[in-house]
Length: 151
Image (cartoon, rainbow, N blue to C red; front, side):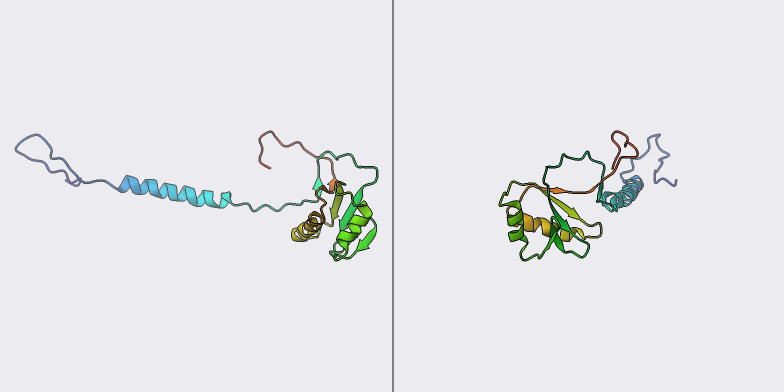
């Protein structure tokens, strides 16, 4: 017979076959391989994000806000005055009157790389100003995302 079972004509008992059939194990392994091949690219984050706009409820602004602006040419301005990066900390201390608890509103042009924005934040942190608020465009949400939907 084709299955490897030997029949004895002397008695009606069939002889036991001690071989393991590995075909189902191979099938399971191939299915798992396909599942991991499909799931692996989905585990990586590759999403283009446009950060400057925000639909968050705007926080109340103080009477005299202190704005630090990072322009598209990577020059810095405190309020309306353009300052050099070397004298940025002294100028910030002068304009903030040494109040390290004052909230500073950081604005950056849309084309400014994220690394340059972080560099300015590090300059402010190095000067002792830890209360930094990022300024974005205030937009009205067009649709409300469904509860539990991935964003």
